[in-house]
Amino acid sequence: MKLRTRFFLIFSILAVIPLLILTEYSYVRYRDITYERMDELSENLFQNAVTQTNNMLSTVQTSISYLTFYSNENDYSVIENLRPYAEEDTQLTAYDTFRTTQHLNGVFQNIMASYDYITGIYIFTPSDVTFSCSQSSNILSSRYSPKGKNWYENTLAQNGHFYVSAFMDPDMFIGEVEDAVYFSLSINDLYTNEFLGVILVSCDSDIFDLSTVNTMPETTLLYISSKETNYTLYSNIDELPESFSGTDAKIKKTDLAVDSLELTAAFDYDSLYAEFSLTGALFLVVAFTCILIFLVLAYVMTKNMIRPLEELSTTMSRQGKDLSFYSPYMNRTDEIGTLYNEYSNMLEELNASIKRDYQDKLNILDAQMKSLEARINSHFLFNTLESINSMAEIDENEDIATMSLALGNMFRYAIKTPSEIVTLRDEINHVKDYVSIQSIRFSNKFTLTLDIPDELYQQKVLKLILQPLVENSFYHGLNYCTAGDNITIQAKRDSTILYITVSDNGQGMTQEVLDELRAKLSEEASFTELGHRNKQGIGLKNIHSRIELYYGRGYGLSITSTPGEGTSITIKIPVLQGSGVIQEAKE
Image (cartoon, rainbow, N blue to C red; front, side, top):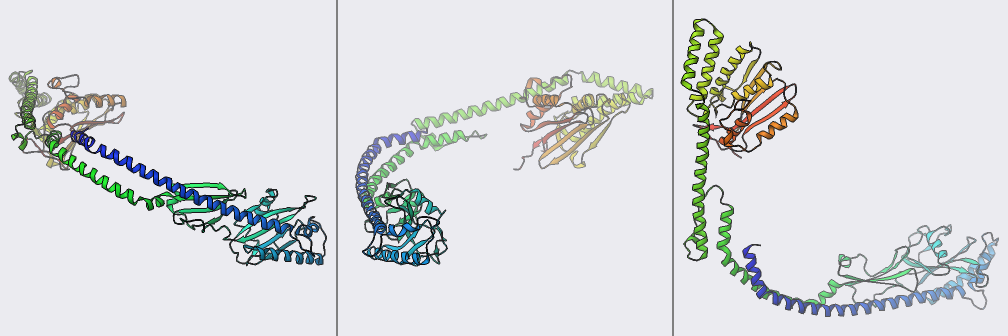
């Protein structure tokens, strides 16, 4: 945790936390009282809605029961009129059906006159004879048969209880169908319990209108639905707002007098609470204004106290390569000033230490290379080679003369070159001297191919990095001219990078050997290995380490090889300008 945060928390705890606790307690208490009041209002509204709905259902049930047993002095009751139609194969004359229709129509009209919410009465008998009377545009189709329809089968399944639905079979009526609520009931003979048919009563769609008891229509949703079909028989809101589906919407449900019906009430407590929250909002505004003032004061005090330490921390984390440092806080005489001055002294000592360490590494590198040169008595070697060359010319032995001259050039280049940085042309000439010797030794069984643009011959490179690679290709790739016959040197420049590739068409190497060699190249460079030779001459690792130490990380050797096809070793070095100054690569 940052120091500024710690101080800020301390000030907040001392000044703000007590105020927050008091605010929280007061606000929660006010909110609880408000919610208790809302619970009372919503419970009263819900109970009133349940009572009114059950009363209406009871009235409808009473009217249908009255219809079933209705009779007058001259006519039989509805049940008595339906008995002749109880059998599916009943043979009745058209006149009998006409008389029954007349009797039932009189009953239907009297019932609809007594209960104005009833808009249609339909009776379906087992013998497929239908009796109907309607005061709405819902005219029953003469070809309609209810058998097998969902509503009809559900009614039979109720075993004498009412079945309620807001949607019937679309093929039941002719033309446009008005919205209605349908009550259906199976009719049985009281004495024989014989099934006489199904009575269907359509009621006005507003039969369950609860607007008179819903005193909060904007924040209360009341709807009546069927538990079996999920049809909504009544809803005071056509489209459900998102607020009623939120976590703060309180929902109440209860079964109605008809078992298949359910009344649901959803109360939008967010909207309800908004009507009570003006005082609470004002209280919160005052409390949080005070808290904000305390927080601002705590922040200003913390910032002024911690700013010097933050600036010092930022400076230390972003110091980078530039070790120079100055700050006006160094003139202070308190602890802050002491920290800044001590940090400045530490940077000066670190800078001096880095310079000493860098100089020591260069000295070690130079000493190791001079130790390599000192292993050979150069004057004795050169004089001997000159003598051999002279003797070969006298004896007219061209091969010996060529070999001694090339060998002398190689040693002179390796030992007497005044700088570690040479031109690519010098490196290529050094390789040519080596190849001329090996060509004589192996009777010109291999060739050296150069693919180097003329403009690259003057590029500056590190000395003695090509000949060891050619030697490695000759011994290990061509296997003394038994596995291949060509070594190729290619060079190209890509922006500020110079790539030199030495490849052969020799035996290549297996993936295991290649992985082992790559792992060796990726090891950290060590000064102790420079200037020493192994079985592979100066060695690929030594060349890679010299390039890394001179040019930096990211430069050096990369190797690819395919068994039976050959090996390629690519040198990646930056382009040098002037006397060995590395050209900065542009991003």
